[in-house]
Image (cartoon, rainbow, N blue to C red):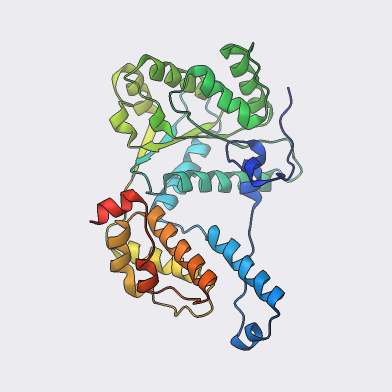
Length: 334
């Protein structure tokens, strides 16, 4: 069986992180930061040039620069140490579980670690195009062992026929991972596994089997996974004994929050925005978003897009007030 090629995705539909092509697009994507034009330069732009300039800034703000939060730094440090610790392990490898409420930056943290690990692997092996250092999957809702194994196969581009049984899929996946030197496996949406059910226990056993067969460091992420019974019973004890748990929460109103707001503001590319405006509203922003980094990022990015589309070119409290946030942030801010 062969894996997919490192070709450019033909459209955004092929850029899902749960495929090798999509993951490689993500890890190799370094969007340019648009320049801000002087008032005189902007005034003499043709209509076509102005439209191109605005479109570049719109595209930039839709994927605003990732901010190095305390969670991201902790995952990077712990993940790096674990990959080194597991380098020569033949069994009982150590892993990491990231658990917390939605919107606290879990997926961003683990995918950014995966991106860093992939970049480091490429730097160490610049002439090797056959390596797949990182594998990323999400656990499907109501997953079965075969569904989970199929997610591994889908990332690698391995065909899964109706006749293929679980053992066939696992053997193919583990063979490719070993041949391509996979050293980090990221499993997101771990909360879709509940050890309190037979199906969940079977999926957990399948994941454990993958972790034994693939010589890699496993990183898991999910919403409050402790509440799903992940550490209960014999299986739970095994998981707890091999994995470090990192909790993610909303930011309290401290200097860390102030720094995150300042960092996000520095990334803006708006012509009339006055630096320090958002920093001066950091208490208001904390109240609006309940300290959730995901909600804060969405709020500021949407406000920036609105500023470009309306021509105001700045973010104000008035413009922020017009933007509806996700229901979770809205509920917590009441």
